[in-house]
Length: 152
Image 1 (cartoon, rainbow, N blue to C red):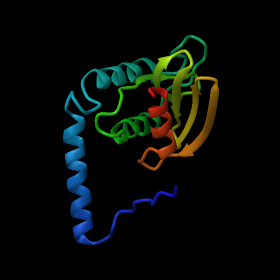
Image 2 (image 1 turned 60 degrees about the vertical axis):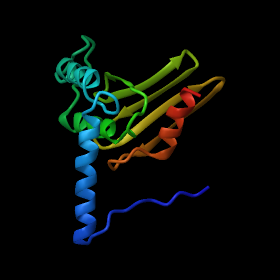
Image 3 (image 1 turned 30 degrees about the vertical axis):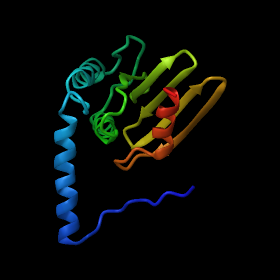
Image 4 (image 1 turned 120 degrees about the vertical axis):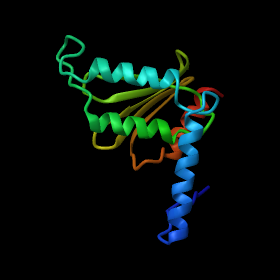
């Protein structure tokens, strides 16, 4: 099944609709019922505070950069409203990681790089899948589908 890619229009009306949609989305993400705010924001801030300096793990880990932080936050804001809450972490290579975990054999990890690449790996029962996708502010459909499969 092919999916159409949405592109924003260039008219004044399209720009207005895009801006209003962004405002509504930010408002909804601030709610504890639908959004990424609250505990997730605290977890995000804790990871940044702990991992923004070199050698944060005592084993020469690279720092998480502002570009990585911005990409990770945009990724979280791009999650559909009401989507399952992930856990947030950092990796020794300076990337941030967003994870969904149901059990030892049902888990997905997405690493977010400073240059906007999403590296993912999933265990789904006996099956495994991994890959890399570019991130342009919208989460690729195959990654959202993997999250759903973790919990199915």
